[in-house]
Image 1: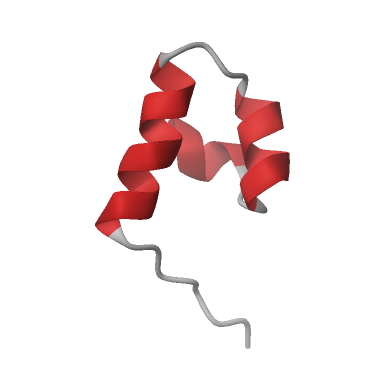
Image 2: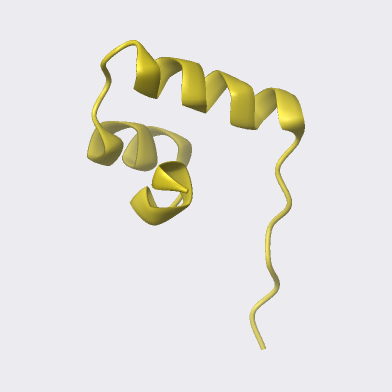
Length: 41
């Protein structure tokens, strides 16, 4: 069974801020090794 990764609030805020400033979902997902759906949520 796969374990779910837990990300810190600070990490989530950083990724969200980059997305709001115009970076693409795909680029952020690839750079931070997370699913684009996780960023979208």
